[in-house]
Length: 390
Image (cartoon, rainbow, N blue to C red; front, side, top):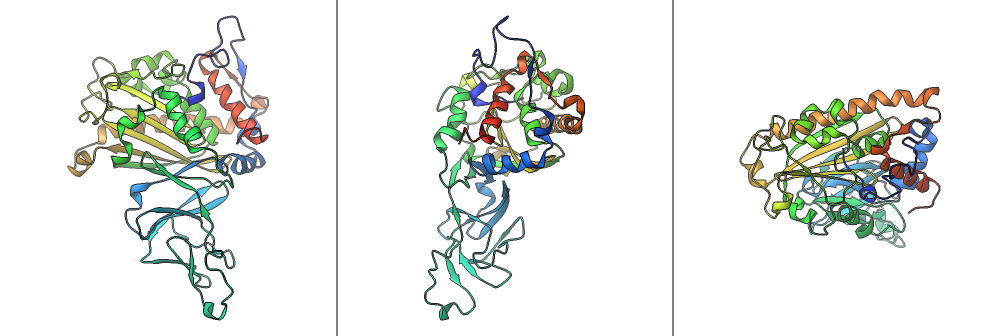
């Protein structure tokens, strides 16, 4: 249902004029969604080379709070140091390679200590203690510290990159939003970094990550499986939605008072939202694993964590003004709308995944004209795997 930034304008490559190209174009072949070796290459050449949205910054409220996440083939540890700054490290002790933190989240008082031989690191990753360390004066405590990873904060989330030479954050991450919305300031008006978490739902989807992205990129399926969504956003029932238009947001139905499961009123408009953004839904895909959905009174952020060729964990956050969350307001109707959309989408992806093994899909399937922009995503994937893109 969302769009990707590079496929949002009606160019000849993504939205062919009548008669200029066939109605049906080919998809990736089925083995791209099932082959463990292709998945390994995607981990190495996509998820370990691009900026990856790892955690919500506010989840790590105070020094010593940490969370571990899987990025590609690596376990990554993100924590907040004594100065209140976020730091990211490979979750590996530099002594014998034991995993430093085995819990998904937690809190330490002052230091991070390996449970194997008690090598101890401060919250900036420097080696500060180890059994008999005083008898080894030649050890450089900084050099033997944890492997530090580049980290940037944007939209209230910590983005981490495992690459030795990370691509430009401004071009590949912020640029995706600018290109989709057509206005550099448009996404800033939602002030996502100042919103509070109203609800988080984690989905364990038994489908390849690319199937999930492809599903979010098109609305050809919306009239079939999303009755609640098309009631609120009637143009989605036409199958085209907002895919081809930079800066276009789908208008709410006249009878819909808010972006809720029954169309009833939501909450007050976020400060900074302009009249042109009111009563409209905007969506974008920030490759390789983030979906951002913008409506006037809240923001929905999906982060995908590809775990295997046929399994993807999706963490979905619903974000509201702090006063809405602090007041105990009932956000269930706005949560329920997109939760149903998620469940419907993920069910469709899980229904599709087994067919990727079928000989009927050996050479792939087809894309109809309103899905042609997905072809550009497929080219992006294959270019990454062939080393033609950073």
